[in-house]
Image (tube, rainbow, N blue to C red):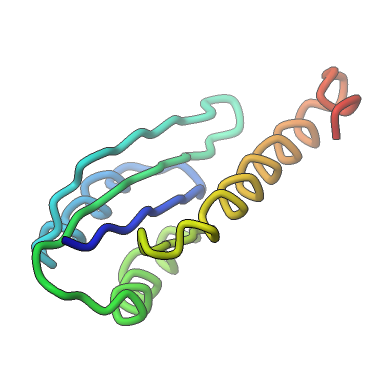
Length: 117
């Protein structure tokens, strides 16, 4: 069993969840975890998804297809990581959180977030 983790953020619009989950379903992936959040004030969508595959899969091919079919059309910033690259995803996750916090602080100049960044 192979597993990937996907982290994304992009401008909020309808159809993102449907298209992302359909993308993995079409490749016989089983979504074992998904969480999403919309910053309604700034209209930014965030998502974390974990997906398992029974058969052998090629993450580089999936990344290319995801970029072309989902990432580019939705103007996403995203990262996709195989479970065997566990060292990579925590740093990427921290980078994504930092980017989200920076974005929020920049769009809310009077906030106390600037003290932490």
